[in-house]
Amino acid sequence: MFIQDHKPDIVALLEPKVSSSQADSICSSFNYSDWVTIEAVGYLGGIWILWKSALSVDIIDTHPQSVTLQVDDRMNQPWCLSFVYASPVLTLRSYLFTELTGQESPWMTIGDFNSVAGPDEVSNPATYSSARSSDFNDWIFREGLVDLGYFGTKFTWMRGLQSTTFKGARLDRALGNLEWALAFPDAKVKHLPLVQSDHCPLLVTTRSAQISVNCKRFRYNMVWATHPNFHSLMQQAWDQNRDIESNKASMARALTDWNRDVFGNVFHKKKKILARISGIQRRLAERASAELLKLEKKLGLELEEILYQEELLLWYQRSREEWIVSGDRNTRFYHIATKLKNSSARISKLKDDDGLWIVDEDKVREHISKYFMELFARDQLLSV
Image 1 (cartoon, helix red, strand yellow):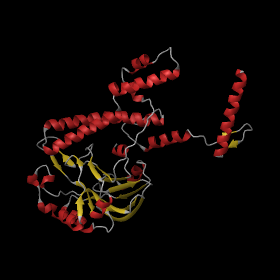
Image 2: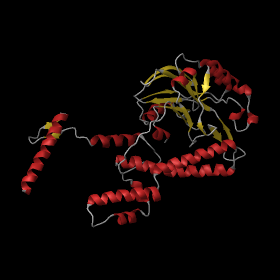
Image 3: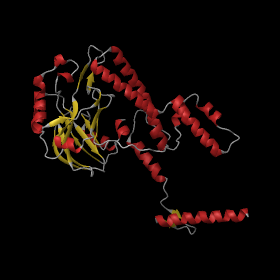
Image 4: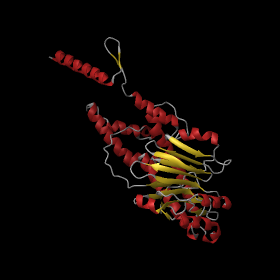
């Protein structure tokens, strides 16, 4: 869901909890050109990193708890990026902070450090242990790293269904050295809502988003037909006394307004639900309550329904397949089916009047142009 919404150039999945034999199969379903995986020990740990072909990525170092890459986006000087999944075991985590050393080039490190920097980063400050955090804080100071801050909920890890059992902590973060901070002054870190996990995803943008104005054409959404008022709207919007083009234009306007005012845009619904979940999780970080936890669960169920509608809208409609696998969202099949349908819309060869195939692109274009010119010329002669 988050990959589809934000389309990151690099993705890291921490603690995937699946065997290594399944890693390549699952990674290929995300439609990224390259990836590297660090195997989990049993079902604990593990790091998967995927990136787009537009980036030049070299693997500098691998460690059971981290992976360091050199990234060249062809817009900035090459920089180093370390993804971390620190062990929950203190002794193993201390070993990571001994091994993970700084880079001379700009360097950012991000992930689940399984450590907090101070008592203000846990839901119950009385449980904070400076001894358990000392290696982490010493490492930050020794490497000259600065916290890149965040937008969103304070805690990146939350657990507990009741206010009496609720726990929260900021275990995940992004840190950078001074060179990286100067190279990317507009970088922002956002804590996305927790969905089906006790950790929230971190989204890092290295540059300001550019505002673009798009004139989107009208598209029919098949999920509209599931609404009980849809058919009556169609009957009211279609005028038998007007030509088809006028009816198409009025129908598009009517459906657009109806979608906004009655049905509701699926993407807007999802955005609104995620914003509400994020707001609740921010409140939970301040004070846990049974009402907020109950509301969070209710909104999670609503989000599931919206995700089903989004799946139906995006992949069933685009692939034009007559079946869909329930619960298998955003799978490789739908991506491939969509691409095949799009590619099949292109004309790659034509057969001429002599039954010979024309495969050269320029000759295909010339043949089509000649055909229609002759067709229109015949129509003009017939109408004289």
